[in-house]
Length: 426
Ligand SMILES: [Fe+2]
Image (cartoon, rainbow, N blue to C red; front, side, top):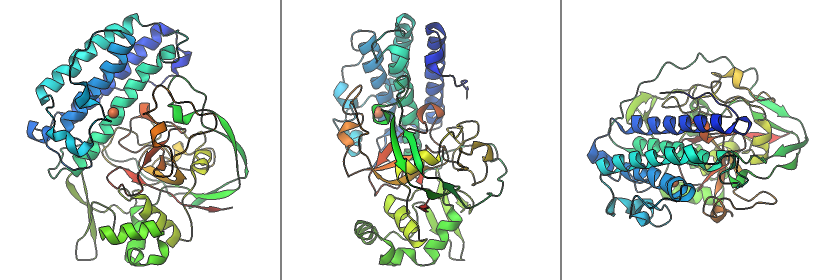
């Protein structure tokens, strides 16, 4: 897969910025097409889970989003597709999409290619030094790159739910180094949360605001499969004391007894599947496929709690991203301790990459929030229904995550590549 040197787009002159954005668009497309290449047409059109779209919907939707914002929006060109309603994510739920008159895999592939040709022509003539916040610094082009990379992660979640094994190959993980200490103290004091960046950040990450955070301790690394297994084997799923009321209701309704994709082998050992491949449970990797309720119950069982998102963001300060993080290049997490050079200013490791981390926080707007460029990106999700996740996963490309990046999902969701770390008051 081609790699793009990360530069700060706002510091580039428009001609270099255009070349950089074109390279990022190409890299995202290469990742999309490489991922789908081994998947049969039957599997592209099938609904693998009611939680996920058919893969062919994601593919055409990637093109539709790009056409809408870049070809029609920036370029002012005529529509290339007259099926807008099919690919608008707000018109049909994921579980209904296989029933729609979607483009076939061949039509979808031809469509995204046609859109991309137009996009590159629009980029060529775009005025990226514009004062318009959508066009200035190439924001809308970077938004389209992020959108495609985000859908690659969504498609990986779909492929992970599919019965068939996905043929993946990856280099061996870096050798893990023992963690210096199990937890790190983050001293009390204000820090600057969020960002004022207008070249990449989404509306929900703005604006930059001071938050005073009392001292707390936070796990050096995400909770591992091995540590989580102790909770499972100690009967944590059968002890109501460790669960919130809503968590216990979820536990009873689902009869969950361990993370999704785990299986007891009957001889005391455990396995898990990853993209359809069954493997012995790797004790040193961060646990994933736990919902928020499970993360919260584990934290209570260990006498701790989930960090708030302000605590998480403060603890992750100055954590370098790729190549010192597992972002978008592998097919699963690597053991904790693999990226000591990726430690934050507070000594917190693997905050970026490996697994999304559930936080204690609901998704709420920051002070002075302004919806941009459309209310459906974040604003319609604010409230107490969604929990915030931070830091990206192994499936997240570096173009689609930052220390300030906020992801969110329902507290019952387990198919996403999410784990957690725990905290306690200082
Ligand atoms: Fe989308």
